[in-house]
Length: 509
Image 1: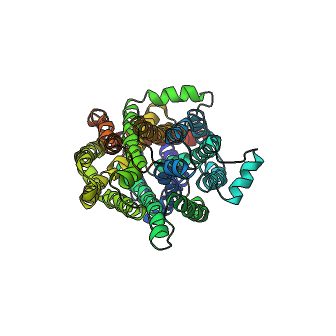
Image 2 (image 1 turned 135 degrees about the vertical axis):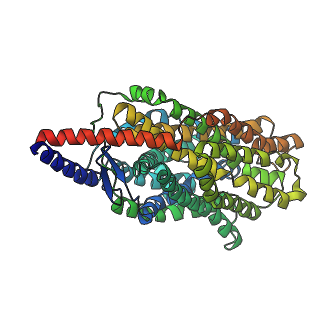
Image 3 (image 1 turned 135 degrees about the horizontal axis):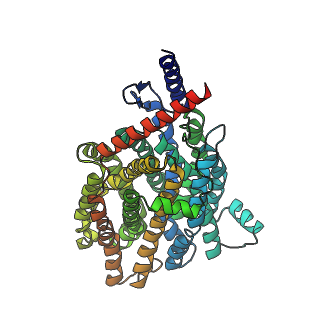
């Protein structure tokens, strides 16, 4: 009887402790006495998901203009070589090899009163605001004054390299812990997709704002062009970043850290080897490299294709690109519904096939067929949501496999490699797009490009990205983690954690 009484007391303590240690997780928790599993009966509230997700909006405003407008602005307006601009953007990613794993590991290990992820986000926000302004508004008096403090006088290749590198570093500080935080908000297979869906929906909201702002500047304020677009985007982000980040940082609490203390003797190199030994994760990040590079190529050449090949003005381009990403945003619920029926990895495969199908028609179109091109791109754009938000949800599932094997929670380390591959893929897409069309003689600064140069833009805008995306097909089709397997892994992890907590509680009484 005494033994049963002590066990019952320990069980109550574990149940209470489990609820408190998962303060960020909303809803009732029940300890299954037959299995020892602590399961969530109700998930995160929509308010918590929305507050977490809305923080993604301002950073998402920043990302797309780097591909859409920075190459055109620095080559056409500031006189830098298009191929050089692409190369500098790619080179700025080299620092991620060191910064991403270091910050990922540190955010896994550094326990503070406000959590493991939030301190890094707070440190990165000021750097993001400064580097964003310097990169997007280099002709402003403020940017000129700051650059003079570093001994610079004019906008050069060095200026571009320094500030885009600083901006990417700030992304690492803010976005990497933010995504790791989101992966830990829920352990449920479908709810993770909902958390990711909220985040990516607001991310697409930011993307649409990044596209709508230049359209407003061109049509309603009479200020078209990449320079005016970048200025307006910078002003909006400087205002929204602190305003929309604050609610999540204040009211959405992080999950408690792992019950097992992480091995602090593991170096970042050893940590990366551990992560890379995770077979499903390895498949996923290789697929991510090709998918993101494909999307980045399309984004980089979109302005040149519409403006030079289709011979359309800037305001029509702004309208087109807004509609393109709006279609991808509206299609997200459809892809999410499909993923619940056939699984996430097969849904991504379906998205790749859909994107490739519509890409095949684009090089056949001429300037007098803009509205047919517009319709085809709406259909193609609807696939982008499947290629963006579902792999991020799959990454959270893969981390459970490592937790099951090791007993440690290395979400930050996993998402550091994820972020590093993602940013490298964006840079790779920009590099491939800009260098390939330049090799075929395309020059955005001259009024008349040859037919061959224009065709190279058309092919690298459509067919090239489709081929890259298709490389991921065999990797994703044989992806081994299904919903059923993920649920079994979570059950094992919960039972193990519960037994450990029971043992620790019994030893302390």
